[in-house]
Length: 353
Image 1 (cartoon, rainbow, N blue to C red):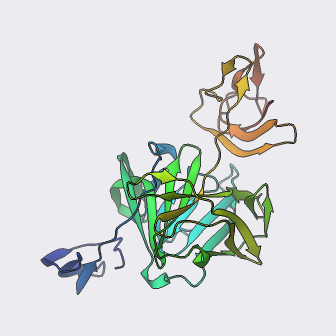
Image 2 (image 1 turned 90 degrees about the vertical axis):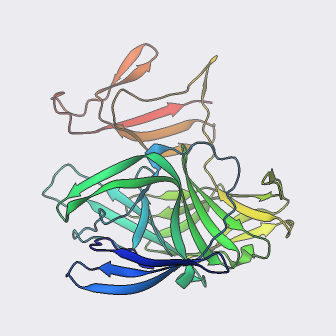
Image 3 (image 1 turned 180 degrees about the vertical axis):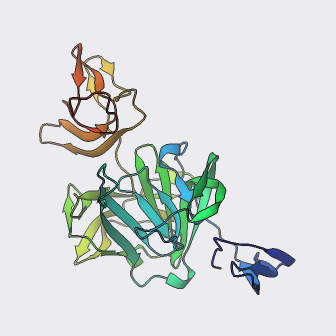
C-alpha cells in the first residue's frame, strides 16, 4: 500500500479478518484534485523477534516518521522515505528497500548551497517488492511541522526508537535501534533463513575499505563507518546465547557480504549485530560521565583511537567557553565578536589511556 501524504476525504466502509491473520479494508481515498478512488487494502500479519538487551531508546537519535514534511534539495516532498534519523551521523533515511546516508558540509550563508554527498545501500537479490519499513517502540514525544509546502501542517508526527524492514530475504529482516551511542543494526535470521543471502550493494560512495574490522565508506566530505559485525543467537525463551559463528565484512567491488568462521545452531534465531562499542574514559580516580558545555548544540563529528590507546574526539559547539581542563577554561571563540553566537566553534579533545 502506498501511504497517502495529502489525504483528504478518506473513509473505510468495510473491514474483515481472513484465516491467515491478515486484515482487509475496503474504502475510498479522497485525492488532492477533488476526485475519489476506491481501494481494497490488505494488511498481512508479521511476526518479529526483537533482539534482547536493548535499553531505553535515545530520543536524540529517534526515527521520525515521514509524513510529507521532508523535502529534497529542490523543495519537493520525498514520498519514498518512510523514517529518518538526523541525530545520528551521517543522518540515515529509510525507504522500504533502501538505506541512505547523507554527509554534509553546512555553511552559514543562505546565498550559497550546502554540499551534500549521498550513499545508498540496497540489498542484492532481495524480495524488493515485499520489503516494508515500519516504526516500533513509539516514544511519548512527537513533532509538529508547519512548512510552506504543507500549509495545512503535520501534527503529532511520531518518533520511534526502532524501525524494522521486513522481508529482505526469506526469513531475514533488518532492525535499527536508536541507541545512545548511535544506530544499532540487527540482521535477524529466523530458522531456515540463510546468512549467505545477505549482500549489501553500495551506491554513490568514493571508496569502501576495512580498518580494524570496521567497514569504512569514503565520501567527498569525509569517511564514515559501519561497526564491526558480531553475532549471537536467541533461544526459545528469548534469551541471548553465544555462538561459534563469527562474521566478518567481505568486500567485492561495491558489494559487501558477511564471510564467517565456525557454525551456528540452525534451530535458533541468528542475529548479526552492528553496534559501536562504548567509549569509557578513566581520569585518575574519577570516571568521566559527561563531556560538553551548557550549549544546546554540542556535536561530535568524528572519533578515533591511536596506537597508544589515546582517544581523539572532534566536533563543534555553539558555546564560546568550553569545560575546565586542569582548572583552566578553554576559550573556543572563533571570532573577535563574542556576541555573534551564530557561528559554531571547532572542538578537538584528546583523552589518554
